[in-house]
Structures are given as structure tokens and as C-alpha cells.
Image (cartoon, rainbow, N blue to C red):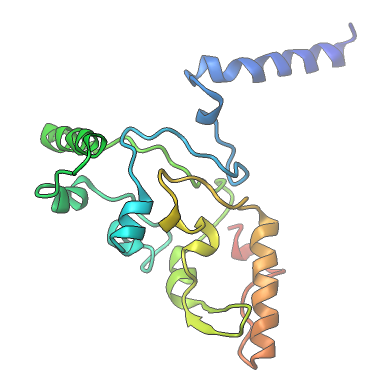
Length: 206
């Protein structure tokens, strides 16, 4: 075996062994930034977006605060969850069991909250600002309707129909640029300023 093959074999062996060495129990625990469509890790509490965002019509930003004020959309604190669930204890056995887990975490008072597993994960070299998209940008749909701000579903999928969160779109550079190009074309057709960056690398890589 020559040196190049030996090095390749070594790297492949290490690559296959890393999940075990890092303590991952299943393939779903390993997430590549941006690319893992349908990534749906098992969460410590099986929170249902379908129930909360769909049936109960709770606005995304009630739980994911900060999306209209800065780069990041926050994971809700236990105080946000407990604001409702100190009185809402669930009707079904599974709901009561989940809320009991939430209550246990809340009463522990350790400040660590629930160890939710992150679903959407941009690479470190990508700069994405939620505020720019959620509040500042104007979005034009296929019918020419103009709205202030881009609906969360454009990138995250329709969470009113999802149970436990999963990644809907492949959040690659191509996904973003295609959306920017499409929006610029619609803005020009509507005689509005076309401002979505397409060729400005430093808009997303800083």
C-alpha cells in the first residue's frame, strides 16, 4: 500500500469512528451545517409545533424572541413555557407526561433549561441576520403580493403542520442566492428597489 492510500485509509477510518468517539448514538445525532434536510433529532420533550403554532395559533416570535431585533431567534426560556403550563397540564397521557418533564426541569432551578437539540445550524463562516429578513425586507410572492418581512415558513417550512421540529430546506448558498435573485426580479417588475445581495460576498461572509 503506497503512502497516499495509507493516508486515505487512515482518514476514512477516523471519519467513521468519530461518531462513536464523540458519543453519538445514532446517525440522526450527526448534523452537517445547512445540508441536512429532514433532520429531526429526538428532543428531550416532544414539543409539537403543530399544536402550539397551528391549533393554538401562537406566533413564532412569542417563543423565538429576538428574530425581529437581531441576528438570532432565541430558544424559549423555561419561564416562557411555564407561563402557560403552570396552569395548562395537558389532556392526554402523553401531554401530561411531557409537561411533567417540563415542570421537573423548571423546578430544578439550575438555570440550564431543557437541553433542546439544535435543528437549523449555519456554518461558522456564514453570517445570517434574522432581523433583516423578518422585519426589514419586503417579500413579494408569486402573485405579486407585497409584505413587510419574510414569513418564517419560507426557510423553516410550515411549522403549523409539523410535530417535532425538522429541517425542511437545504439551507445552502444556492438556496439563499436563488431566493435573492427571484425576489430582485419581482421587485424590479413591481418597480421597487431590488436590494437582495447576489454578488456581494461580504453580505453573508464576514
